Length: 215
Image 1 (cartoon, rainbow, N blue to C red):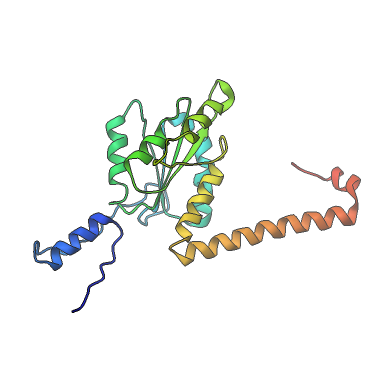
Image 2: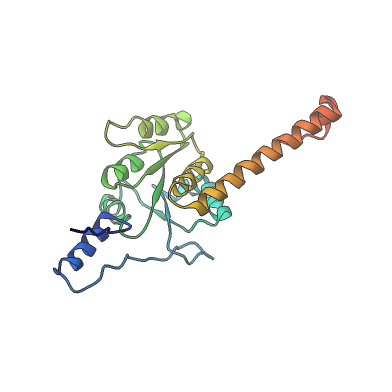
């Protein structure tokens, strides 16, 4: 008696490969590939960055810059939970089949996008509360973070898409040594920057340091 291991990017792909092995189809399963819609990045996106409105883009672009800095292939689009519910469902359901590993969803106000996407995809979803014109974004934060049991959304601070991107890279790093190594280097560089500042403060004194300090 022997056994066969099937390695796939998703349950759907695994089932297609099993169908081929058992003779139910004569087509070998191929992963669905798509190209990133970010200029200069042609690889299949690993992270999806979505937002409820284009007004969220200034906030979400900060996270996009981090992904770009690390060289992570990603895509960016608008998916409104309230105005385009069918598009939202399609995006969430098809994301694993397209090879995405993680979704960053930014939303303001009622901010239902991250939670609804998390309800329809097995992928990790990171919610970014976007500060709106009222309540300083606290409404968005509460909406995203107060998810019911069984539907987790990793929630970062208000307007902090930078941390959302860094968390997405850490998620990628759990299964890919390349991104793990990149994150280690990033953390080392952060430590070095702080140590340089500490040494400068201790050497020059606080008054001299303040005279040249830039926020």
